[in-house]
Amino acid sequence: MTETQALKPGATIGILGGGQLGRMLSVAASRLGFVTHIYEPGANPPAGQVADRVTTAAYDDVDALTTFAASVDVITYEFENIPTAALDILESHRPIRPGREALRVSQDRLTEKNFLRDLGLTTAPFADISDQASLDAALAEIGAPAILKTRRFGYDGKGQARIMTLEDAPQALADMAGAPALLEGFIDFSHEVSVIAARGLSGEVACYDPGENVHLDGILHTTKVPAKLTNSQRMDAVLLAAKILNALDYIGVLGVELFVTPQGLVVNEIAPRVHNSGHWTQNGCAVDQFEQHIRAVVGWPLGDGQRHSDVVMENLIGDDMDRVPELAKEADCAIHLYGKADVKPGRKMGHVNRVVRTKA
Ligand code: AMP
Image (tube, rainbow, N blue to C red; front, side, top):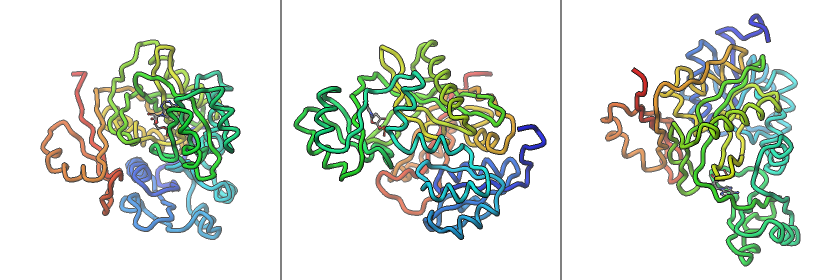
């Protein structure tokens, strides 16, 4: 895209999904002078509090999708599980960025694993599972321990069953409730890291420093930068993210989750969107992941992604909200709350970024 094709302030960005990611994308877009329009089936979405317009409608509402698309200049999204039929309608009116290929690949764990393997990247050993016979055959090949995951619609560790010994297999399969599944060999990793990377309309790539992630009960708890990585591993992480972005002809921000092992980095999964493990960039970089994503989808040049501080991001889950008054007393702790009225166990309510300045 040439400079003249880039959207100008005042243009409207349509965002599919009104959760916290949509909210933080809206804030970034309005800081750059854009108008935002959220499409979200649920009532009172967190993003609705900060966006210019909200359409409350289902993803099979053809009229609402058409009217929404006609009201915006470009469409992006905060989650990858958008129904294909909705995408077909939207795409016939306006560009969707990141594009359909990124969604196709990331919506199905099997497609994703094949894509990553074909790119020459290392993944856990995997096999497609449709019934007990295919599971038995895959376990004979891959061995236990292993993890059975639904191919679609998994998040925060949901739709997963661990198979520690072969006896666990029937229950794990039952847990999939008939959904197509993927068996993954268990990776003996020392820790988990993720890379948040962006690619612009003209193909330029900018990567953030990898962050080190700790999960509790399957939900991201903290992300710390810098991550514990050798210089070679850090470079590998950045190079593999760029390889993925180029292969998908990607426009926008992408998250890549990695396992660190003595043999090198193993790719767990990719998310074609801004990512919880990239929230640290809000207080660690001049241009954070949300502004970076908006810059990419409107055809602006990218920020460089360089980090000016060490940061520890901590998610505020459920009752952690009670700690907000105490957290507010910490001078170097930036608080980001999502405006969710109902506190529920396991619900992401906000996060904090504790900043350690590394440069004068
Ligand atoms: P996922 O939903 O694929 O991101 O998995 C959630 C969490 O389960 C990961 O962050 C890991 O801690 C763990 N996990 C997933 N897949 C594997 C694997 N193949 N080997 C070991 N641990 C895994």
